[in-house]
Amino acid sequence: LLAASGSLMRIARRDASEETERRLAPRLRVDLVAMVTMSASKVGLVEFETDVVDLSASGCAIRTAGSLAVGTQLAIDLELADTPVKFTGVVVRTWTVGRAAHAGIQFDPMPAPITQLLNRFLVEQLRTTDG
Image: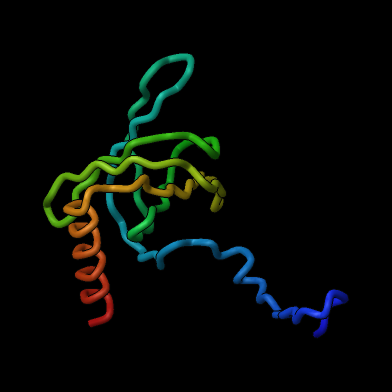
């Protein structure tokens, strides 16, 4: 199409999934136990056990007993390939499945060795689920 100013304008049809899918990396279903630590204004630091239900190079989804507010900063401690790892991040999305609350966590930038460990873990998980 030609715009009024004479420049070309590109029109593209957006699929509904493109509008809702904003993840930076594909996620892999996992079943990992983790400890979450976060600051609660009235009681200070709060720590609770949770299940990590999917994982990617840029974040994860956790199942929680109660809902978390979008924007909440937290730390997640878990084991990847028998190595304890701490990720920090922020809650970017929440939803419920049945009665279970879930939160999508976007990881903060991490040191190269942690990124490499996470990527190796994800590749290994893909190999075991595909083969």
